[in-house]
Image (tube, rainbow over all chains, first blue to last red; front, side, top):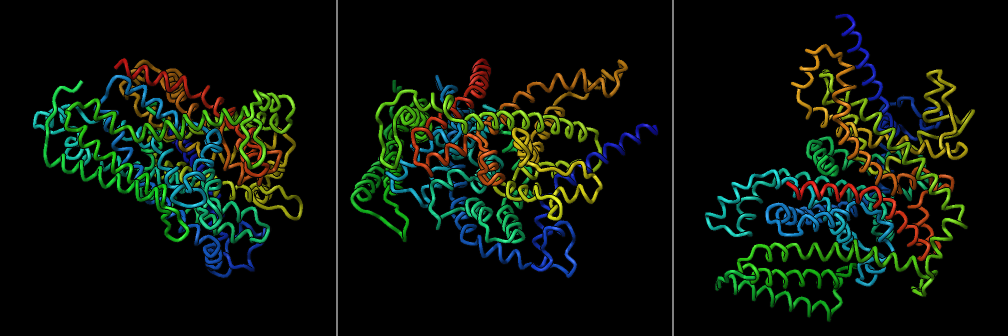
Length: 274
Length: 358
C-alpha cells in the first residue's frame, strides 16, 4: 500500500514538473507584459515586477499590432462561416448520398489537406494577380476557404456518418427530397459539428503565415505576418515584443480556454479515423 | 438516366429568377471595375454571380429527381475549386520547375530536369535543407511520440486533476507557430557570461550549469536539434490526446482479465495496451511527419532565416519571392510535395479501401 502511494506521488511530481515546463513560455509573456519599462532587463527576465502591475507594454504592443489584429479578424470571421457552410454540404453529400466513385472523390479532395503549400504557391500568386485579388483580404479569404474544403468536408462527413440512416429513410418516406432532408433533418442536428469546424477554421486562419505573407501587402497584413516582422526589427524592445506576442496569441488562446472541447474534436478529426 | 421529371411551377420561376440574376451579375461585373476603397470586387462579383446562376441550374436539376446527378452537381463547385487550386496548380508548378523561368517575366522555355539536377548536385544550401529536415523530422516525431505516450499513460492512472493537466498539455497547440517561435527564440537565447538570460539563466539559478548551452547556435547538425523543442512543446499534447483516446477505447474487461491472470500493471501496458496502440502510432506518425516535412513558419520565427537552420520551405520562399528564381522555387516545392506524398498517399489509399469494403 505504501508503495502504491509512493508511485502516485511520483506520478504527480512528474505531471507537475511537465506542467511547469509547458506553462513557462506563457508565464514569461505575461510576466514581461506587466513589468514597467525600467524593470525590463535580460538579467531580471524571470523576476516578478517589484513596483506593481503595469500595462504599458501591452499598450505599446497593441499600438504596433492594432491594424493587423483588425485585419485578422476581418479575414477570419467570414472565412470560418463560409467554409463551414461549404464543408457541411459536402460532408452531407459524401456521407449520405454516396455514388460510384464518391469515396475516390473524397480521397482526392482529402489529399489537398496534406500538400505543402509551397508546391502550389507560384501558380496561386499568378492566378490571384490575374483575378486582381492579390494583396488584399478578400483574396486571402477565398484562398483559405478553398484550401479549407478538405478538412471541413472531413469533419462534417465523419459527423454525418455517425447519424443513422433510419432517420433519413423516415424522411424519404415522408416525401422529403435531398434538399429537404438536409434542411429539416441534418442541418438542425449539426450544431456541434458547426462549432467544431468554425473554431477549427478560425484558429487555422488566425495562425496561418505562408499565404498571409505572400498574398497580402503591408497594409493588409494579418497579425502573424506583422508579429514576425516586429520580431525581425531591431528597433522594438523585447518586452514590447513579448506583450505583442501575447496579444496576437490571445484570441485563439481564449477560444481554446472556453471552447476547448470543440477545438479538441477538430484536432482529432485531422487524424482521420485513427 | 432520369427516371422521372416533376415540373413544379414555383420552383421553375425561382430557377429562372436565379439564372437571370446570375447572368446579369456576370455580365455587369465583367464590364465594370467594381471597387470599394482599395479593394477590387470585380472577380468576387463574377464568382458570386456565377454561383447564383449555378444555383438556378441546380433547382432545375433537382426537378429531375435523380439524386446521384443532383449530389454530383451540388459538389461540383468544390470539385472544380480543388481541381484547379490543388491538382491544376500542382501541374502548373511542375511545368514551371521544368522551365528556365528566372526574373519577374514568365519564361516557359523547356529546361528539362536541370533544376532538380542542380539542387542535388550543385547546391550546398539544398543539401543542408535536406539534412535539417531529416534531423527535425526524426527529433520531432520521436519527441512527440515518447512524451505524448508518457503523458497519456500518466493521465490514465485515474489521478485527480486529470482534466486540468490535459488542458495544460494541449493549450500550446492553439498558438501559432510564429508566436511560439518568437517566444522560444527568447527562451533559447544563446548569450553567455554576463548576458546570460532565458532558459540558460534558469539553469544557472537552479545550479544546473552543465545544461547551459548555445541552443541552435551550436555547430550543425546539433543546432537544428534544438528547433525540435518548441515544435514538441506545441504538438506533444496533441499526441497525448491521440494516445489517451486510444487507451480509453481499450475495454476495462481486458485489463481486468489480465489482472486476474496475475499480470502486473507494467505487464498490462507492455503486452496488452502498447500493442493495441499501434494504429494510433501510425496515425500520429503520418500527421506529425507531414507537418515536419513542410515545417516553415516556426523556423522563420525561431531562426530569423539563419542559413544554418534553413529548411526547404524557407529556401523555396526566398528563392522565389526575393531572388525571383521561379523555376528553382517550383522545383523545391515539387520535391516537398513528393516527400509528403510518399508518406501520406499509402495511408489515404488504405483508408479509402477499408471504407469501401464496409
